[in-house]
View 1 (cartoon, rainbow, N blue to C red):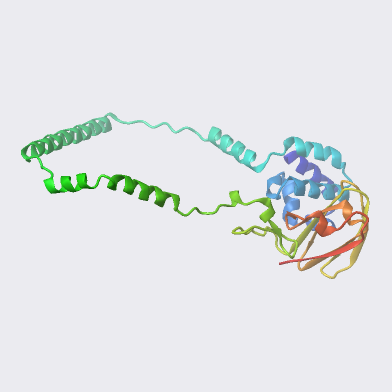
View 2 (cartoon, helix red, strand yellow; view 1 turned 120 degrees about the vertical axis):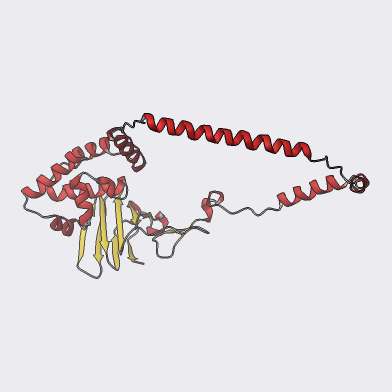
Length: 283
């Protein structure tokens, strides 16, 4: 990914822009812009966000997004595969340390092993001699009679043990929960599952909008100035605010909305042809 970062850095410097300038124009955090330019795209939370940031960056720098997208997809690895790759590379590069054992140490270890072996033999012989001197223990007759007088006790104990096993408590796991038990939180920022709470990954509020068709959009962030534009199919926009983001769509059925990393249900946004205004608040 370093080649991709070099292209972005050179284009930005030729335009005389700083990373803070790009962040202010695209509303992308500075650390994500640095991640793109350094080639360390794995600091960005997921492929979708990385591609969205890359497209917004290309629009500012007047770069060919399709060519950079093809290069990105060809070189991007999921985080688990990337971790395995880095671990393998580290293992190959790690020098093998050769250790040698001197002849004196070999002699010391041999004597120590012989002493341990002799001590074990001595202990074993003495313990066998003591066992031979002890008389055999005869079980009491009364206890044998009691056992014969209760022939059903063994089967009854087995039944009790089996009953106890059947009544052992089973801890609930999230694997047994059906998707029908998932509920959308009232602030549209997360799904709620009984016994499970997802951690919030963002400070403030962050909304990503992906258009599936031509849709007029008006965005107001933290009661600031509003901006209007028409999104086309495939366009991705990311908006970040401190307290709230208000978005108005001319056709709410043509957008997919993700709030703080959580994809919203279509019925919560609006139907096709419907003009909708939504306000997203930071928790």
